[in-house]
Structures are given as structure tokens and as C-alpha cells.
Image (tube, rainbow, N blue to C red; front, side, top):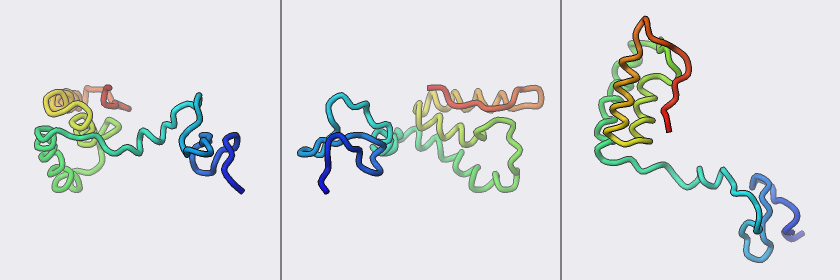
Length: 115
């Protein structure tokens, strides 16, 4: 049984595949999983250096401090994501702003890194 253009293959998210070329048919919406499979974002060297204290905190102090963070994701996870998405300068600014909001009179809840 060969591939047919009108029948989706298993495991490809329902996208139709052109029989001869093995590529998506014209007019199909882009596969969102294909964009994620491209690989991780490239982090600048300065952002990688700025992430070292955060990684050290997670490795050394976080097991002793516990999991009592008032925000979701935790401040260290937020810092790593901000540095990856926005680079060293803006990522550090967002991280510092987040840490300054973490006090007894501050808010709580879900606080994702802005795009």
C-alpha cells in the first residue's frame, strides 16, 4: 500500500504528503511541531555567562531553600528563560525586576517571561 496524497500518514500530525516528493501538499497549514524540532535557540555568550550564577544557585542553594516560590515558574527558571529569549541585558533586567517583586507584600501566581 503506497502513500496517497489524500490520506494522512500516521505520526505526522495529520499533514498530507505529496506522493512523489515527500513534502507537504500545497495549501496545507504549517506543522507547528516542525518549528519546534528545529532545535534550541542560540544563546549569546554573554547571556550564557549571566546564567552561570543562576545555575549555581539551582545546584547548590535551591535544594536547601525549598520550593516556596510564590510565582510560577520559579525565579531561577524565569531567569534562565529570560536570558535565553532576550539575551544578557534585557534578560538580566527582567530577572532583577522579577526578584524585586518577590516579597511578602508582592503578588503571586503565574508570571511568564514576556515575548
